[in-house]
Length: 362
Image (tube, rainbow, N blue to C red):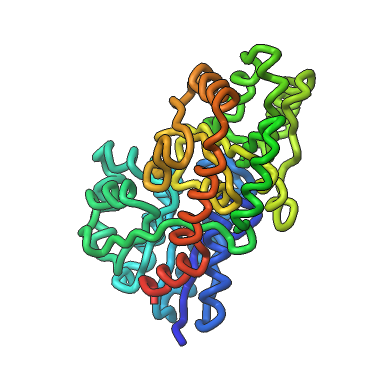
């Protein structure tokens, strides 16, 4: 039994990062002594935005100082924001004598790429510490290429994300779903933050002609950065019956039901801290065709015309054209949906994820 110091965010709030961290934490805790240092955040805002946030970070650093000495291995879910990276640099400094037993895990990658590309003091600090680590875990080859500028490629391990086991549906269920495509149900399920593409999706629907609008229903699920953002969004969609806001958050049976009733999953993201969205893999598991962008780690798990349809980032017109095309030609959607489900089952299950990570960490 190993003593693992586990430094990562756990829900709430529920994000792809916190879900992935909880999944691994629960698995490691079965056979090992795992001590958690929770990288808690009270909001989706990046950076040191309040006194309380600074106090939280101070408490994290104090816990790391107190607990790292007795650990056999340290697992750290690193940040990709400039401010969060400064916190991580302080953690590396505190754990300096334990870096050869430390594994970092990068969720996302777009933000880290900006730190690396600037080639400034943060780049130099990260490069100094990264070269002394036991290793790093990334979601795909794109992130691996980013970190290879900071550390030897041989200690960078690629472990893709996952869809939880309970989400997988049968081929028969997918066929039944696509036997009725009136209306065509499109699901947007993600935190409703700037850059996730929910506003562009609304604009794309509004720009459709009335006869096309009648053939589409778009359901939005996700938590907003503030009540003000939520109120503005609800006012925008209020007069359009084909646009529905389902709520802040769903899980379990309700989450599976939403995916399972949807024909299309749409995430037209250009979010600056995007990685390899778990929501896309969940859409595969539940037999959805995917609309998304060529952004951050998405190309590692998504191929245009194979898993669905690629749209241009920030482009309302690109979304509109794809929706119109799907409305017009949707007979082959079921084949794509079944293929997506099978790909997820073979490559992106929780058991594969947990076993792969444990082999790296332990």
